[in-house]
Image (cartoon, rainbow, N blue to C red; front, top):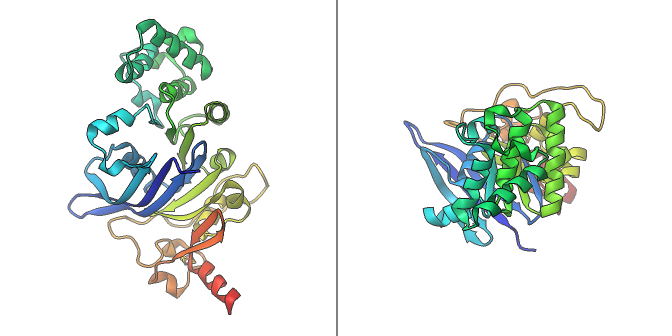
Length: 323
Ligand code: SF4
C-alpha cells in the first residue's frame, strides 16, 4: 500500500535575531485509513509541524526535506494548488473552536462556506449536506442557525469536526482537539472521531501532549522531543515496551487506564530551541544519561518492524548482542 503522506527529513526554521530550527530532520509516514498520534511537551515542535503541513507558518519556512502527499511534494505546491487541497484532501481541527469559528456567522453559514469555496453545489443541497454533517457529529440539526457562542464547548468542537469532514478529505489533522474539554466530553468526542474514521476511512494525524488519550485512539504513535522524533511504534508497543527514556517519562506522567502506578513526571523543562543541547537533546533531563550522550547524537535503532527509537542505550545493547 502506498503511503498517503510521507514527511521526509523535514526541517523548519523560524527567522529572527537568531534563526531557530524548530523541527530538524523529521520523518513520518501516514498510511491511508490510519490514525497516527504525535505526542510531546509544549514547545517540542508539534504545532510547527501542523503549520508546515497546512502552510500556515509565519516568520518561518521549510528549510529542508519534503512533504509528499499522494505522491505530490507539498513543499513545492503553489499557493493555488495548496488552496485546492485544503478541506478537499487535507483538513484541520484545532484546539480552540471558539477562536477558529467565525463569531458573526451561524454554524450553517460556516459549514456552507467551505462547500461553496470548493464546489458548485446548489444552495438547497449545501444546506442538506450541512444538516447531515451536524447529525453525523451528534449536534441537533436545529442548531444550524445558532452562532458559535450559543453552543457548549463540546458542541463547538463537534461542529469543527463536521467542518473538517465537509468535503470528505483523505487526511484530517487534529491539533489538540479535546484539550479544552472536560474528560467526559473528551471521551465522547474521541468515541465519535473513531466512529467517523471507521465509517469514512480517512487518515488522522492526532496531536496531543496527553499520552493516555493517544494510547486509546492511535494505531501508531510518534514521540517528539526538541524538534525531533525520538521514538515511533505501534500504540501497543509504546504502551508495553517504551524504549526511549523520554517516552517512559511521558508515560509515567499520566494516569493509566490499563494499570495502577505511581506518577513520576519528568524533571526540568524542554530546552530552548535557540541553542539546544549538544549530543542527545534529552541528556540534561535524562535519568540514565552517560558521558557519550552529551556529545554524540544518537542514531536510529530498529527494534521491530514497526518500532524505532533514538537512544545510545539501545545501540549499546545491540552492539552487546553481536559481541
Ligand atoms: Fe538518555 Fe542518552 Fe538515551 Fe538520550 S541517548 S535518552 S541522554 S540515555
